[in-house]
Image 1 (cartoon, rainbow, N blue to C red):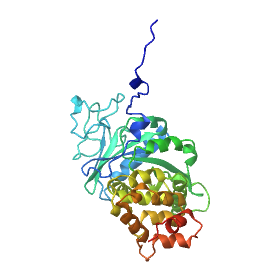
Image 2: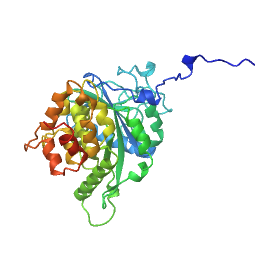
Image 3: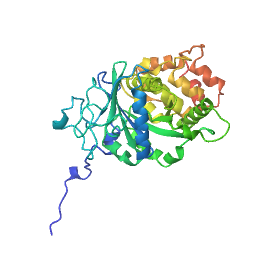
Image 4: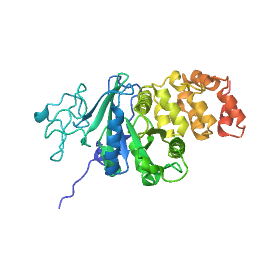
Length: 376
């Protein structure tokens, strides 16, 4: 038997597929296409819950109480560009089980209009496909997936990954985080394909989840919102909360308004990465050669703090130290940027150096600022 001989250039060859880690970690462009549709995927804990959230999301998107408009349910393949549905002859529609209807992708038509199989009644909408809607001139796509189908994230393209957590006990402000307890490692791998860290979407959709006891709806929602913030910080995810019971689409307007800013403003991504100490996404943005000084000094609307100031205030020392040691600041053009970062002032006149000094001189970032030749 003749043994096959491999040439030297073949010894370390590797195929790069659409689902490999290499392709998932490819560098994202810093400046986004302004006309592109922003793609979001919301993970739910089960198929039953996905259908319930689908109905709640549909009701909220079409209540007409916000600037969200042209909301439709599209039954086309997720990866295809948006085109008018050709009804019975449409080749872009997904294959569905008999009896389920196909909705038109036309933005001028109401949800669930158009048919390919049988007409769908308003009382029994389909639970397949994805939402497509517009907000402030930006078009969004939102697809809901159950947790057991998250492997599809390997082959689907998306810009933002949202993880849904339902309020399970309003008395104690608890959400169903135990369901995701062993999933975060996989979720973090999926999130590397996204523009920003995972968005943790806590939501309240069932009044029966309030439980028994002396409590009010307002108090239950506030406690649940605080719990989502705590879980978000623990898993380096951006926390958000929606009330699908008494709330309106203005909550979704705020949520997707933030998503739009995360998509288009690198400084806004850095700010939220600093809040949750997400170093992986922070440095994907910070080490981009096209990052500007304006992005690095992006100011918080409330305090005027830039992302590094936020990290310093929250004592995320490793993140601050890594930023100050970044090769970007050690290059020939980086000195001025570093000087401006160190001496930038927030709304109360504080600088990064002052914030570090208030926390004590024994911190790693304090020695980096004063003892490492960085202080000017």
